[in-house]
Length: 77
Image (tube, rainbow, N blue to C red; front, side):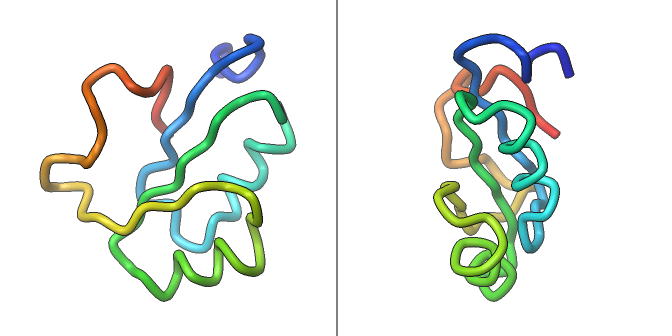
């Protein structure tokens, strides 16, 4: 969790569901870039439009290759 307290950080919330944890992480450090990833488009729709507005969400399976460059994130939750 120390990564959340540095000035610039990027965190991937793997299997984020409706984004409750993602939203909570955003409240810990608003300077941190957060991305939520889940395989369920409907849950991501709820996250993006109701619970965690302003955070990026990606629909993908976590057990396949992720659609991000290696080293893009400082931490994964």
